[in-house]
Image: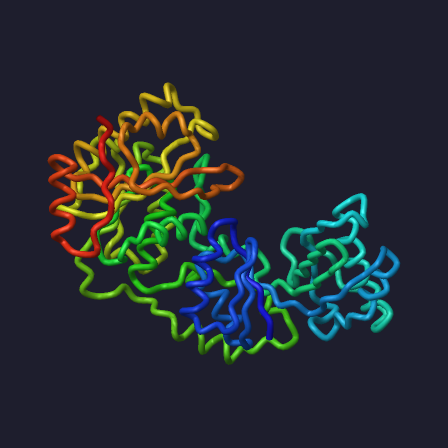
Amino acid sequence: MQIVAKTFYGFEDLLVEELTNLGAKNIRKGNRMVKYEGNKELLYRSNIWLRTAISILMPIETFQFSDEKDLVNKLSYIKFSSYFSVSKTFAVKGAVNTKLFRHSQYPLLLLKDAVADHFRDSFGKRPDVDKNKPNVVFDLHIQENECTVSLNSSGAPLFQRGYRNSVGHAPLNEIVAAALLMRSGWDQSSDLIDPFCGSGTIAIEAALMANGMPSLIERKNYSFKHWKDFDMNLWESLQAEIPRKPKSGLNFKIVGSDTDTEMIRIARDNSRMLPIQNILNFEAKDFKDQEPLGESGTLITNPPYGERLEVDEIESFYKSIGDFFKLKMIGYDCWLISSSYDGLRSIELKPSKKIRVYNGDLECDFRQYKIFSGSFKDYKTNDRKSGPRGRRAGEPKK
């Protein structure tokens, strides 16, 4: 079976790594997606365990077409009723990139009509369309004159984890949060701080990783459950494998803090039903009052950018973040994502890494600042003595 996992731009390599760990075969990286081969079990596992995937597709037909009439004709040959019953609701989504149609949404309507016509011709009635919460979702992808029709096994996007009951004004997408944790190289066994935690997404994703639990542990609804070939016994056996108790013996902490007490209430509420309280804590405090949890650790945070949230004097605000790093976070790897390049310049620390990422439609930098005491020369000397794990430091500007 060919399977396609969709993701956000720039996270394809992370998705390849996840799929390799799941045992996928013939993995091929593309643009915002990864193709691979597997069976029904891997399709289900992909939905449960992949942290950086938006949706998992199963292609059912791929063909070339010459014009609208040819597309309609070839869609009419697909036996949609072999995949779901007339009692289920459905919807059609997708992406169209071709000069053959003046309106990109028009081919989606043609696919919707093809599904409806097939059922009406075969059974005398048609399934209902539900744009909000359909049982079955078809994905149409057209590139020039090539068309692929797929079943979306996930249904709702996989960043809808099932644990987040409410969010703040500018929430970080759950997939982005998981990807940032992976990009940072955090070892999942040492202290982690997010001093601008908002509704808690980074901290919650980190706690799930550290406890060996999938991010989708609380999600119940998937489109493949409404397919005719859904295997309930297989699904239940995969669910039974999921660890649902906190790991014992974890001797580190994950702390999320925020000056907004309402956000802390929301973060606690979002995490309350998850078995991760062994290492996770949320605190209402200003970032300047956040203390390190030990002599070393990792800080990953998503401060206001001045785009979605109004921040007076964004440059002085980011300068205070840089001061906080230098004064309070000695010994820490500090990672920060932002689209405010004026703000990033005001941190007045030299980043050791810059990674371009997208948070929604915003192009951002994800930057590492390795904070050390003493001179940069002394740090490099000690870092070389520590062996091959040493990385370039975030040297303060002179």
